[in-house]
Length: 260
Image 1 (cartoon, rainbow, N blue to C red):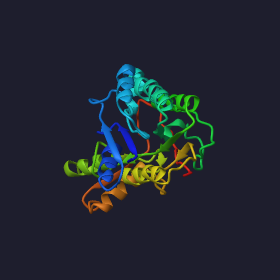
Image 2 (image 1 turned 45 degrees about the vertical axis):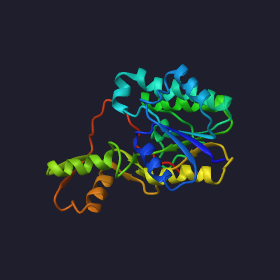
Image 3 (image 1 turned 90 degrees about the horizontal axis):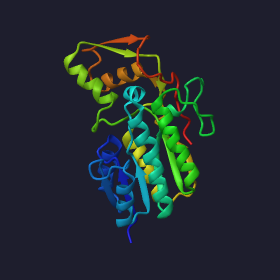
Image 4 (image 1 turned 120 degrees about the vertical axis):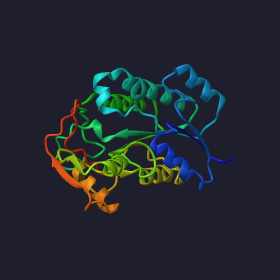
């Protein structure tokens, strides 16, 4: 019998990347978008799990609008905290291994070297706190889980992200202003998806919190420069370094993760 894998948040950039990779895999995948399964509705979630059987649940569903989470945090907590609790409860009840995607924003960014999985968390915005609270629910409820923290996730093919935004702006603007105030590790969804699939392929039981990101630390300005260079646009666009990048939400200045 094939391994059955549920993927929530199927319309997000990571969900779509996993879906594309799944075509070459010998697993039975079930991809659900928010329209098909709203994980924040406990009864709907319960009903869905009761009607289906899964071996793994890859939870890609998340509220990721950092700025809006600061202004109206309710939605962030509904998706990133409460819904994660509901998923964890059902996964435990049904003996499903949970692979949950979390974030570098659980850290405050005050460290000057990569964060390890045992470093103390201290989120400085509502988004980070909502994600950390979700992690804590999983830890309290489950044993068979992977919490995979990643950073600066982007897809060249899917979704709205920094990589695609820079390319779109380069089509209409001659000058781009990009901050150098934050340092992290841009992570391609393909690499993260392969890491997740590898956990399943190897039937890993090394449960707990994991860090996965691509290996090169850089600022957003550095990343923009790399994107333009990769697409042969660097000579056509004036790229200006912006030190005083203003955002409503506080953001960690250094959130490089040490891969586990």
